[in-house]
Amino acid sequence: MRRGNDRLQWLLVLALLPVLCGQPACRSGTPQARPNVVLVVIDTLRMDHLPFYGYRLNTAPFLTDLAAQGVVCESCYSTSSFTSPATASILTSLYPFQHGVHKGLIVTLNQQAQNSSLRLNRIPQSVLTLSEWLRNSGYRTYAVADNLNICEAEGFTQGFDRFVTMNNLGAAQVTRQARQWQKEMRAAAPYFLYLHYMDPHAPYLACKPWYVSGSGELQDAIARYDSEIRSIDEQLRQLFSELDWKENTILVVTADHGEEFLEHGQTGHGKSLYNEVLRVPLLFWSRALAPQRLPQEVSTVDIMPTIGAMLGMKAGEGFSGVSLWPFMRADGQRSPRPLFATLLTSIPGGPEASLRATIWGQWKYIVTDEQFRELYDTRSHPRERINQSGHPGTEPVADKLNGLFLAFKTRCPVFPQDLSQIKIDEKLLEELKTLGYVR
Image 1 (spheres, rainbow, N blue to C red):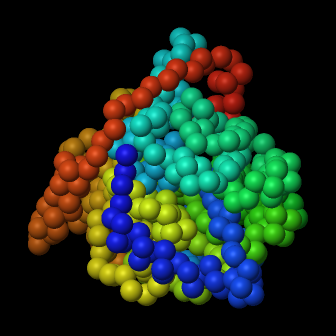
Image 2 (cartoon, helix red, strand yellow):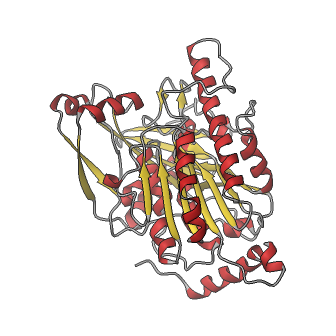
Image 3 (cartoon, rainbow, N blue to C red):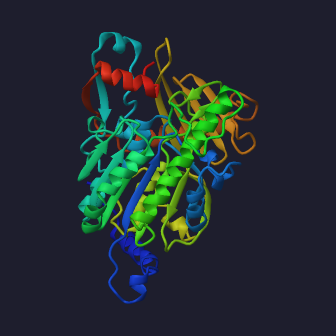
């Protein structure tokens, strides 16, 4: 069991009191209920396609308004570029090589021909998930996931009182399910609600009235992608009002990973660890939070410990992320820390490839199959087009980043792999083909 430092716990509780007392009930002297927690994960959402990160189109007016009132992390990295490992990291504060969820529902041509069962890594039952942590602290826990990968077979239902997995039915269906629980959630307050929207994921749909056709196949795909972001933004605006999140609620909005649009010659995701698939939005909103933007590099593994700290919960041992609450209070250290991402991917027509990335300040180091190495100065060349690995004078930097990863992996807790099996029938195969999960 993960245990924290008691003295640190009390400091966090004391630090949280001004936040909670910023609510009207506290100002009037009435005891303040613990805040509800809402975690929104928008599948395949690139950070740089949101206006509050500088995008030219207003794809998310509601989220932009929230960003102006909340805390925006300017440089947040996912732990992988595929849904299962990345989302497991959000919900456990562990990297994929720790929790063991590496791939998810990806079917190869051989498996397709055999019509066999697929062995899946799942979140080990010995791992403490965010939902379990909150439920153990008295929260009722709810989840709606519109991605087949976020399912019981992969361990995502751990700690949830109610959990619904759908298959890319769209933002309106996710919102509709949350509405159906509205009365129950209000009666059971405080509650934790996890919403996993799927809309920006391929196949991209033209969501009217926001879709404006693009010139050429790529530009039109991007236009459809942007219109789906706008559709989710509208659904969140409605839920925010209907579920009264403006009162006594901590809202966290992020993504599992981004999407490639030929920046490095590929489309989709789950194929590389470049910034177009690793840089994701991270927004914390509460009525009592002071608006600010955090410039330092952070990771999605930081979400779980940050929520815990904001609630004054006892810090867990073994988290790979850190609480961002001290940074929000302007008393945290801003020196860079190493962040990591990994990917196990199937190359079409070839074997599996294993990728790992280390991010440390302005530098990013990618290693493929422990052989091919890439080093990028993302501050000078944010598009990662100039590989400086092997260039004169860069060897110490590459060695430093490589050493940071190896040192962390050597000392970090790693949980025993947990496996489950799922039958690949014709219906599932067709659903996976639609999502691009058959290779």
